Structures are given as structure tokens and as C-alpha cells.
Image 1 (spheres, rainbow, N blue to C red):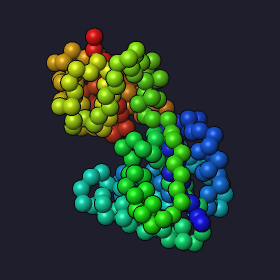
Image 2: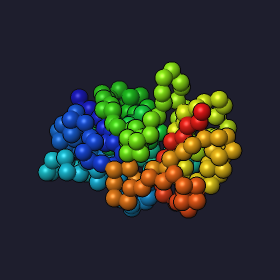
Image 3: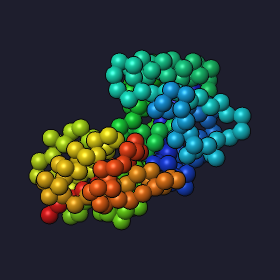
Length: 221
């Protein structure tokens, strides 16, 4: 039976793919990659492209962020994947970061497994781990907890000292205002490991940013 592999390709630096991820990508007959914009480029595909074997079928699927349209697109993608699996073709579904961290792959996997197809997930370097290394910023120390949350869920922060805020796009000012009020020190990292990478710690510079691929790491005493 053909198999679906969910392959984490890391934050966008091709050198951060694991050896296993490279091996799986090279061995699959079909590679499927997500794009946030209809007809747009896929960062996941660009990251892994050098490892795709010649003759491999490449499919880019548009996955809008949220709403009813997202569910429709996920089901449409599932039907495409199912067709290839029925043809006996192994598929590598590429995901930025790790497949089980805020990934569309999670929803696709539900449909695939309900149909009884074999699956395997290959972990990838998460964006927040890559950003921490680039910024030389510890994520968490000692026996403290680490809270990871999207930018629209700041109300989840209670007494945590160490937090990672993902999905900060277009919410930069509100997030920085909140962190300043709560006594956090923070670092903003955009396009980790890619052209245009920046590390910012200045409030005004961060608020000016409008970059989808960005993360804020924060801590307080």
C-alpha cells in the first residue's frame, strides 16, 4: 500500500532538514507542498527543492488561513492525495517547521487515516527553536514552563516567565504593548534562516514590521 509522509522541512533553511527528511523526499514519487496564497510560491517547496529527485511529480496546493474556505481546500487536497495513493504512489507532504505545530497537515492526516492509508510523520526543526538559536535567546531555563501561543491569545498568559508568540503578523503593536505592560523582555525574529532574516529588540522597529514569517520570544524575571 502506498504511504503518506508528513515531512517537516524546518523554518526555511535547507541545511536544517534532517537526514531522514531528505531520504524520504528523495524516495517519494509525489511531493505536495502548501502555499498560503492562491497561485503563490511555497516556502516549504523552495526549502526542499534541491532534494527532490528528477521526475518527481510536484503539486502545490493553496491553503487559506482560517474560515470555511480553508476546510474546503483541505478536503480538496485530501482528494488529490487519495487519488495518488490509489495509484500506488508514495507522497511526501512538506510542512514548514514541524508537521504537528500549527500545521495544515494535521487536518489532512485526519482524512487520510480515516480512509485507512498508511502514514508516517517526519519531525522538523520548529521555527521557534530556530529563532531562539539565531537570536541566542534561551527559550526556557530550569524547571520553568514554556508557553507557546498565537498572537491573538495573549489572554492565556498568566504567571509564565517564558513565552513564544507565533502568528504575530499584523498584531505587532498590540503584542508589544502587552509585553511592555507585563514586564517582558522580548526579541522579534523574521524570516529565520532565509534571505531577509532580521533580529529586532527595539520596540519601534518591531512595531513597523509586517512580516508573516515572524516570531516573538519573550521572558521576564
